[in-house]
Image (cartoon, rainbow, N blue to C red; front, side, top):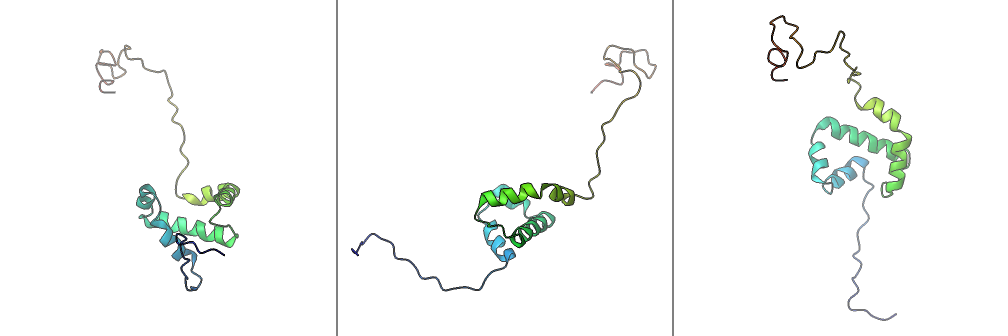
Length: 123
């Protein structure tokens, strides 16, 4: 073997005890973009993020493989959506009954003015 003066020496890293997923994620949060860091300041979002990571770890997902993480997310998409916001209610479309009032039609309030000059002003 030839000696190379430009080759970096490998630093010996002492073996450490296995870290929990929470500790690993806390360290990784610092490397995330600012938009994600801001969202993770909310305790509810952070707890949900941690729960998803714990579930991924329990299922044996390799966190260094984006492909595995995306596949896991796709496989569990329905249940993640269901538990994402349980208090959110279903939004229904508003359907107006009766005829549509045009801008130049007489105002339905009975003032005799056009709708655009009366109740429709500012809309």
